[in-house]
Image (cartoon, rainbow, N blue to C red):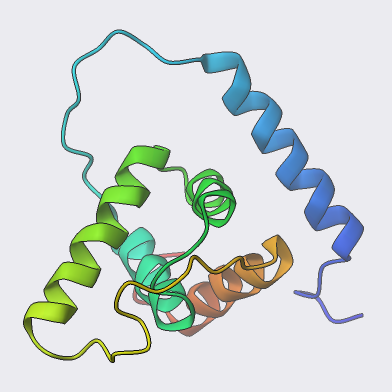
Length: 125
């Protein structure tokens, strides 16, 4: 196994721990505020959008956990990105009003690792 290859069981265990940590926080009564995204988070969101412009709720929840963003911020980002692409005519008919697409958490993790590897120096990691 290469240095950056992760066992599927390890990946699922890590995702499970993230979900448990998120459950403990609960919803707060704070008003909604704009969530600033890091360059890395934006790059990951764009890569996932290329794969699935309409990710399922579960996929968005997993992605939010993996890149440390609130689920609402991820949902709104995908909604806004689809709107931007549709206005620019760059979103094909296949994806307009499309069904939600589930992406396996392992595949999401691989996308994140790909972005990280591709931009290791530029992101200061």
